[in-house]
Length: 400
Ligand SMILES: [Zn+2]
Image (cartoon, rainbow, N blue to C red; front, top):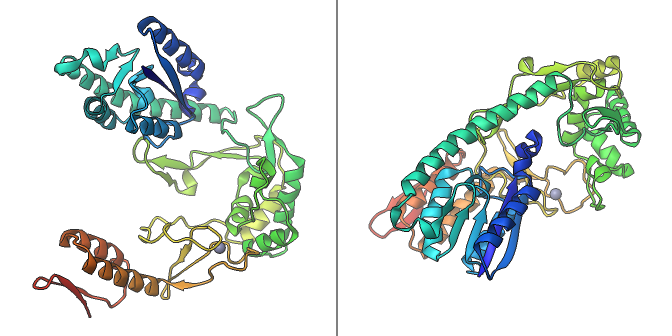
């Protein structure tokens, strides 16, 4: 019998220092349970460290499900349901339908749940209630964690996992920042160049020419070839962290686990004189007056092709909007790559894709509804003159 122990700890658990959710504790209690309830067995461990339970997009859970699919395991054991998933509708479908169908036994120790003992619907009602409660708890917990973090920030305690470029977490106190001199040199240089009238693009290009290490190269152990992007420069030039301030509560979420939205600048909270500045306030303010380093956040809808087109260098192509909208490599003005895409017309791409889709439709048997949805999605963003007419008689598209 092959038993799979699945363990998960989220960033929130680590932040609240809930010992009962640590991997060490989960492993100990699961092994204890196994030794009490099983005689002959083989153990496989799956651990996701630092992942939220609100989705199944976790490396070890994916691996676990692959094992399930290939029938390499007989039973999954977790500390509680929420370790496996906090999306309780998804959890329900796995536990009540998918696992029983494949013949996988599921045990949640703290919930006193064992699928082998709850066959025939006994206890399923109980489980449904439990899921419902967990769902409420999950949302409640997220709000609580956020409130706890904000309270810490108000006291000037640095709680982020990473330190900003130019700083490191102080060796005496992990909740304070101290200047990291080798990186600070680059930060000062960037501000000086901006003061001289260089734009973000020009600064990035110059740093790349000189081979100045990027923040990632400073921090990462593997020496990946990375280049400065103008957006990284803009980000540094408008970041108040360099005059000693900490800005927080910049984002809000409409729903738990949902997308983050940027709040208007006036609603951000600032903790002044939190740490040693790298740049003087006068320089910072002069730079702010000189350039528009605050990006207008793009709240408008994304084009359906955004994120789907890749440059020869591997970067996702960026859409430049306007009358003659086009896609280009985001690194085109700062890169030293010769093969990067400079310009590819959006109109051309859309027409090409619609054309290819029509060709594809003619050779396959897709439903009209599905095809209409696809084509609508592309054309709604396009001002192109292509019109697609569905011809019922011979089931073919004609183009006008
Ligand atoms: Zn490129």
